[in-house]
Length: 131
Image (cartoon, rainbow, N blue to C red; front, side, top):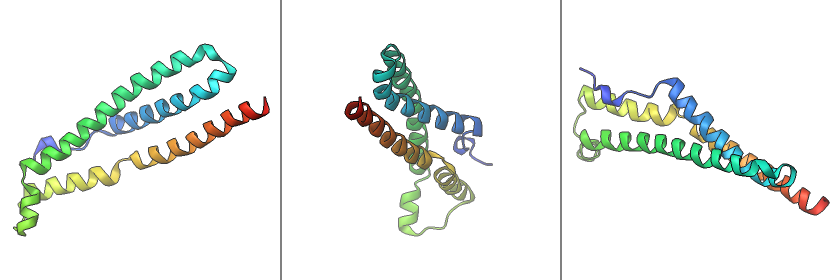
């Protein structure tokens, strides 16, 4: 019988968290631009970023804990170290872990945050030096 605790999050939850994390990262970096063009929006953008990050990182925490629990409860490290053969349930756990890591869009999040950070810094420096 498959272990239901090791199922992947549904797509709407994965991509919802991805969009939330990305939009809060953009909001946080937009603060520096908003300070120059619309100071009244700085505080709402900051609250959105902080509250959104709270939710996003809580979701990421849950995923990390689920992965750790699966490894711990199935004693996978010990079994791999001893080169014991894996049970069907162990294989399902390993497939879950590998799928979870390979199907997550989080690497794109980091790349996009990097690009928007550079853009925000460039725009801010342009406002400082050319205003």
